[in-house]
Length: 106
Image 1: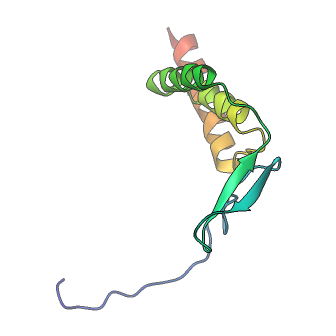
Image 2: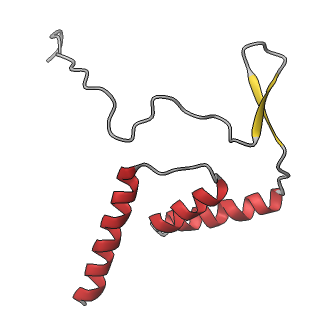
Image 3: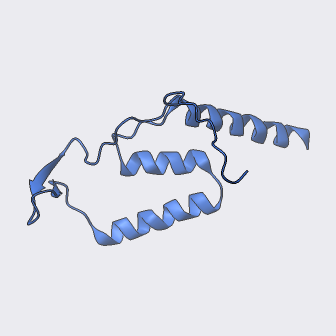
């Protein structure tokens, strides 16, 4: 209702919720930029633009196909340090169970 206070209850972070975000990978370094409050990321890895575009297309296809297991595999290939949270892994198992049930029901 307008002009009424709503009680807010602070419950803390949810399971798997991050309290901070890593913005660089283990093999990357932070470097100063022209602005003293902004750091850049420098990587020793060589990047092939064609490979990146092909990879992004493959990732898009897996998302469009609603294939979470393949999407997760691709994300882990792109970001080797990525560790999915337990709830994502539980959802993948649930999806596989549903798909298996749908296949066996026909």
